Length: 297
Image (cartoon, rainbow, N blue to C red; front, top):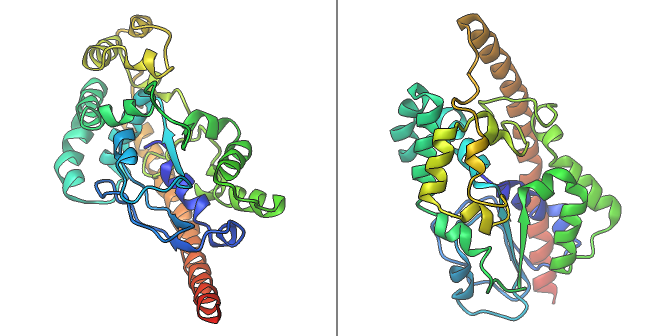
């Protein structure tokens, strides 16, 4: 829930890869529990992994030229995004089947408590990317930087990878995968709870955390926000309100919000289907070009 799929989709865009010098494209798969892949030289692997710095250091057959892009996010925003996704938008699986109804029927504080518990399973991995021994063969990029200036943030990634991407190609690909383009025309801050691209902002956790759940977070993960640079100290939760901001008050308001969300979701899904079909055509073309070049060589 840090924007890693967004970064993956940009970096594995076939028209971009053609200019990258990467000889291999492995794309479109999320492997949160899998180990690091063994690649051909100059290969590109773009699945999304959930792993820690130690996992990267112990990867098989390490090469000095290996590069890794890590995307992080304020854990409080991560937790909010996670519980809303599990309740409303995430692809059905064993986890969502178990948690969807309890989260939907929980109040805001209990939703955040569930999210804190879930985050605890990979909090150590998350913190490892902020450790003092963190080394320069990995680029860590925060979601806030991506949101603030996606064109500059992705160009920073290209430079780190050593990819010389023509300006017009970079701009077009980044725009194609922008929040506006992939959300059915919504701007950041315009929420659709039923979309994977729900709101696209930073700091939304303030609308969901109360003083009680903030204190709980700090108690479960003492000092983590300060160590990772998201807060200056451990007493940030004391400034929160006693109760989280209320949900839509009336049934009529909730129904209107749901109808608007479903209409926006229908539009967004149509855009995504067309984009997926085009990406498949581009990948097939790229693989054909690669195979022809390999056999010719």
